[in-house]
Image (cartoon, rainbow, N blue to C red; front, side, top):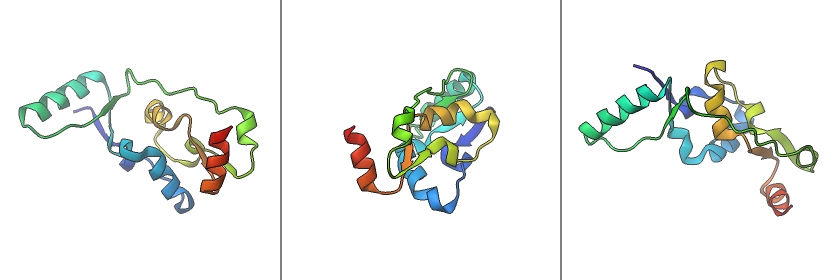
Length: 120
């Protein structure tokens, strides 16, 4: 069918980072990764036909991962653990969708560190 699955089911991380990754994904945790735009279109038509709600689809043939490098200066700030994408495991096939979801997200030790970094 071309449906791979919800992003949250396709990513894993160490227990230490679970809350941070879930917070970073927010509502996007339920976005459905699909092989291509044809699969997304078919699924959308199915949902419409059955009045089954709304879903955001991430088609691998057109989704582009962000190249949002936070800059080396941010990575060296106190409290920075590193880019979120470095702390998740996933099948290489879905990398562009994972990059799209997490490309500019840093994991930090505390909320205070996050606030300080956001101010810069």
